[in-house]
Length: 105
Image 1 (cartoon, rainbow, N blue to C red):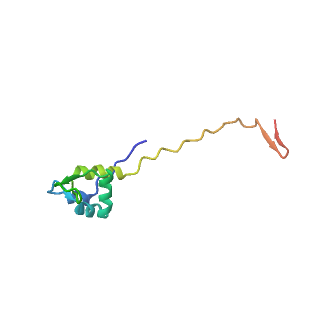
Image 2: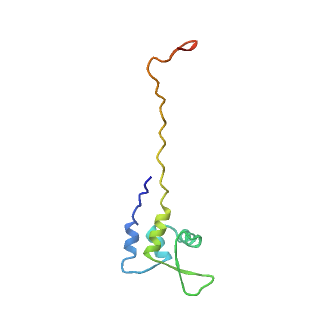
Image 3: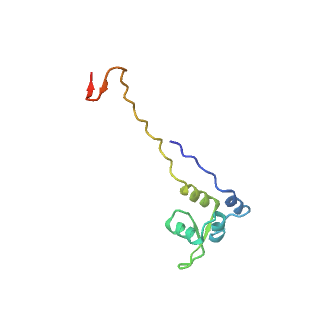
């Protein structure tokens, strides 16, 4: 069972060009998600973040490219196991015949 890792979208990589971190609003725009959605992921721990400043109520978060990659890989669906093959019961031809009344040998 192999898990295919999809690369980070191009628009997200381009958003980080020349920058070490992005704000919540800019990362939300790059991922094409809502700010509240990303904020919820940051609070839940799905999206790693770094707090800026010393705020207790309005926490300003910064996100690095590594944080975005971790988040992207956590969003990918888990690998699907291959379907189990049924073992066919092989019977030699002519061993059993069926009739209207049932099984006759």
